[in-house]
Amino acid sequence: MKKILLLFATFSLALVSCRQEIDPADPMSTGDEVTVNIVPAIPDTFSLTKAPGANANSGKGGITNIDWASYDLRYILAIYKADGSALAKPVMKEFKNATNLDATFSLRLVPGNYKLVLWADFVTAGDQANDLHYSTADLKNVTMINGYAVNDESRDAYFAIKDLTVGDASFNESITLKRPFGKVRVVTNDIQDLNSGTVPTSVKITYPAGTIPNGINAVEGTLLSGTNGSAVSYTANVNTFYQQGHDAAAANQTLFTDYIFGIPAGQSAIKFTIETYDQTSALIRSRN
Image (cartoon, rainbow, N blue to C red):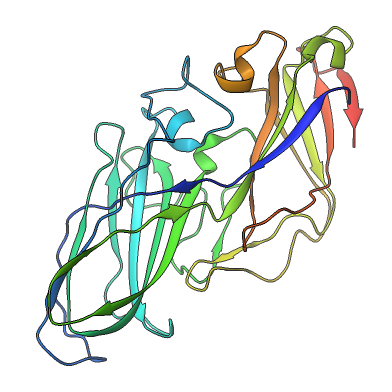
């Protein structure tokens, strides 16, 4: 492949949830309850747009690139006992859209030690009952659902884990979320030369067996055991709505993006085969 760049990016994202108060008894601790506000914020590096278009950038993530008319951002807050063995409070959820992503979880806790887990992902706009891309009923076992897809920015997601010590005074706690995976981008700067003078309209990605982790334990911050047991292939249209960053130049094109679970943070080799197709579904070129 003449001039293809394979880029991995893991971005930090500070997110916030919305105000909600619960006050059940906490059997693990004693003392007077205090108010704890969980208050993250979205960093400037993730500029928000209402819909993909002139500001879409394949180097950024879902916050910038999704169509906000189709999705809401869901926040999940889980407070566990300090060892992560059991929930200390009921799970809290809030849903936000592009008009206002800022929010705060406000809850009452008795003095003691806790483990705080935050998860944020995209769900279908207006649907507060169902997961979209990730099963979240048990944050110790977060896996892909509803089919794998490349070139889908709504698969972006974020999480954070923090040990929380609650004393006798109320306080605010800032939480910075990050991706539980790396973002994979395959881009070219000679789109027509690369594909024999033909601009591809779709791309097929095949990952060999043992390449894709099954999911993560978001409470412990570790990958689940196991990977794809056999080779898997995914076909998608080339996302032509990317128009900023690398894709601003006419000869440049992002062929595909993907989000692959990858904890701890670092660099890993990902093997795959990429095939490009024209508008008649005829194969243009195949590369490993």
